[in-house]
Image (cartoon, rainbow, N blue to C red; front, side):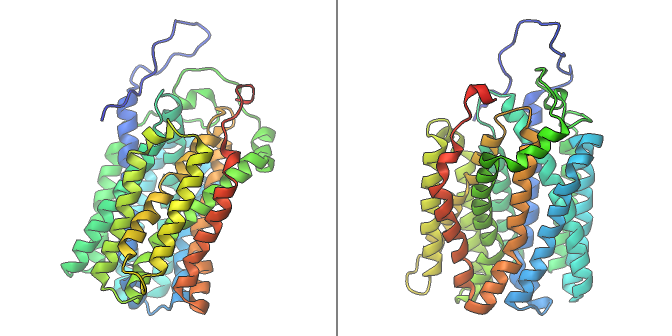
Length: 418
C-alpha cells in the first residue's frame, strides 16, 4: 500500500517559515504507526491475561472493575497534565519517557499479580496507566498533525496500527496462555520489547518543543496562535462536546470488549484459550476496519458512516450477549470490533479540522475517551456484579443508539469556520 504523505510543493514565500530540512514525512508516519502498534500490543497483553489476573488477586466481578479503573484513572491524569508536558518538552521526548515508564510499571504489575499482592498491583497499575495515557496523548497530537500535512486520510490507518497491535498482542497472549507461560514472564518480555522499540521509533518523530504554535505541526504554514481564553472556550462548544460524546460511546464499546469480553466468554462456558481467541476476532475486525477504512472515509460522509458503524457494533454486541442461545459469539465479536473500529478516528478527524484549536479540542476528546476507559471498570463491573455481565455489556449498545442518532453533528465545518 502506497501512501502519498508529502503535499505538493508550494511556491516560495518569505512569510512562510521553512520546514525542517531533516523532516521526512514518510518516516514520521511510519514512526507513528509503530508507536500506535506498540500501545496496542501492550494493552492487548494486559487484556489477554485478565481472567488469570482476576483469579490470582482473588477479585470478584465488581472488585475487578474497581481494579481496572485504576489504569483509566492514571491515563486520565496524564491527559490533564499532558498538554503542559508536550508544550514544554515536545512529543518526541515525552514519548521516550512514556514508553520506558509504562514498560517498567508493566513489569512491576506482572510481578505483583503473580505474587497475589493486591496493594502493589494497584500502585503499579496506576503508574502503568499514567505513562500509557501519556503516550496515547502524544500519539494523537502527532497523528492529527501528520494527517493535516497529507492530502490522504491518515488517521484511520494510524489508529488501525493500534488495532493491529491489539491483534498481535491478543494472539501472543493466547499463545502464552496455551504454552503455560507465567504471567510475570509474559509481561516482562512485552515490557522490554515495548521500551526498546518505542525509544527507537521516536527518533523518527520531528523534534519540537511547543504544542500551541504553527511550527508544531511541521507543515510550515503560518497560522494565528490560540489564546488561553480560546482554548478554554472549546469546553463550551456544542459541536466539540457532542462529537466527544459520540466518541465516548465508541470508546466505551471498544474498551468494554477489551476489559470484559474474555471474562464474559469464559464465564459463559468457554476455555481461557477460547476466550482469548474471541478477543482476537474482535481485534482482527478492529484492525481491518481501521487499516482499510481510509478508503471508505474518503467516499462516505461522516454522519452516514457513523450511523452504519453504530448499527454494526450493536448487532455484534447483541450476538455476543446471546451466546447461550446462538453459537455466534465469535461472529458477534467480529462485528463488535468492525463497528467500533472507525468511530474514534472519525471524531478525531472532525475535531482536527481547525488547526488553530485542534490541540485544545483533541484534549477535550481525550478527556472523554479516558473517562470512558475509567468507567469501563467500576461502572460496568458494578452492573455486572448486580445483574450479570450480560447487562454490563448491554450498556455500550444503548449508548451507541444515541451516538448513531446524533451523527449529523459530525458534518464538516464550513470553510469560513476553519
